[in-house]
Length: 194
Image (tube, rainbow, N blue to C red; front, side, top):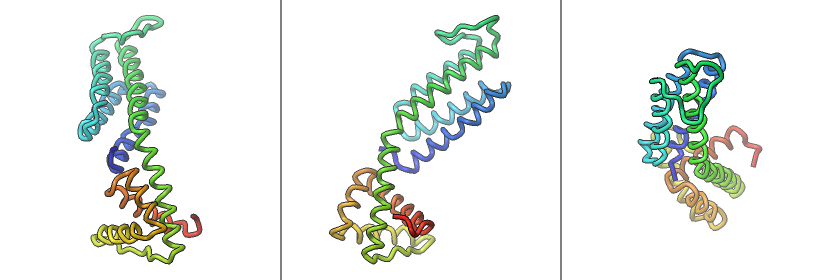
């Protein structure tokens, strides 16, 4: 399972795709170059997270590099003369589509676990409030220690403890603290929701 921070980093890269599609739609001359740079960025993040799909993304980038040299991607045909720009843009479009699909499918199971952990975290906070636990935590450097202390306290409560075990089982002990912190913050912004 990827850590929440790593999932968010990958999601941040995926959030750049609409801008690439806008560039493609406007027939911007740098579309293939921008897709190649995006693929390089994605590769770096995947490599840093030791994700084997990095090799697939490198192959997609290789297809764009080959297209820049005039190699027509396999299975592609053109109406009219295949100009270098058409070849590059077609390869970039195919590489972008394939990379997004691959990465989305790869991280989806972990994203589902985080979503479920967040849901359970909100339930833990609602139950803790109902039981009278103080959820006021200091901001700044002492917050991490306060979160750990609160988590241990919640974990020992007979009603709340099973929920903490579920959250830790979904995302691990470190990310459980992130889930707790975000649930507290969400509750502070929406105090009447459960």
